[in-house]
Amino acid sequence: MIAELPIPLQKKLTRLVSQCSIAWQLIEPDDRIMVAFSGGKDSLLLIHLLESVRRIVPFKFDIGVFHLNQSAPDFPAQQALLALQNEGLHVWHEDLDTASILSEKISPGDSPCGLCSRLRRGIIYTQATTNRYNKIALGHHRDDAIETFLMNAMFNGQLKSMPAKLLADNAVNVVIRPMLYIPEDLLIEAQKYLTIPVSEQTFCTRGRSGERFETKQLLKELERKNPNAKGSLMRALHNVVPSHLLDARLLKNFKDNTPGDTF
Image (cartoon, rainbow, N blue to C red; front, side, top):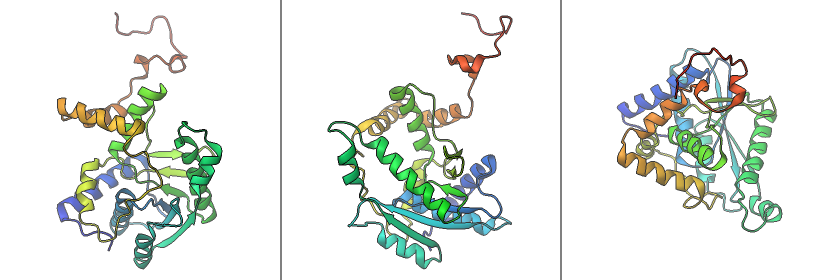
């Protein structure tokens, strides 16, 4: 057993995953879903919740677990992978010497995040295709989507976030995020009841610096002034009004007599 959650918390988390899946057709009959397992709490709870959904839906789907070990030779997630394998899951991993690649390709002072993300994404896509998994499940939650939305707006000049379902650029891999309706504080609460060890060590060393950390701090400040700030931002991602934005591509059929607000 991956986790032994209190029944109310278990039901709430399973319901949120089910709602997200139904809304976006994430989990479907005969799916083969590969979880990209980081070793952290989010991806571990994702596996637990997918198993919970599998027990209640009236159809079959398979779950596999792939881990990209970027911390070789330490391999901090090894104990968790062995425990997941003992649960009867198909589990495998690949080692990547990320540090050497980044030191060769990235100039001093430049951010390594873009290249690191592309390396990781390419390997995950290849593993899913090679092992015949039609969907890749990522452990992102509601707060991740909100933070990404703000980061793209403030630092990249784009209105973009994390979709619940995405066809990858290669037009082969389908990426799903079943926990996208779950607030992070619920996952932090659920972490207390995990029976498999979580690996806190990751390759990334930018956890307390950089754009995402700054965005987290901004959201904390917003929540002090408005406790419903995160919920409101998540609703905004579901309630886009294209006619009131400034992207001319959205107004290609615009006519002079189109009614609208006046200044």
